[in-house]
Amino acid sequence: MTRIINRVGDAMLARVLGREEAGACVPENGQACACVASDGYCSGGVYFRRYRQGYYNCTGACVTSTSRSLCYVKKAGVC
Image (cartoon, rainbow, N blue to C red):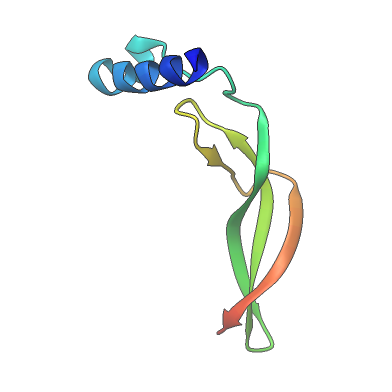
């Protein structure tokens, strides 16, 4: 319960002061989280979505970037 209250309080403080001033990053900042949808590509008329290793950002969202390691590729539709 304390962790949730701290996280909500930090997020509110970050919105008011701005992240740099508040120093209000969540404790999990930088740690690995689930695989997250990243970029994609077309091949043979099929669109494939790449999923990459995610990490927690300062506000606690699980995000990724194209420089992160690839988890898997999944068909996502047509081009």
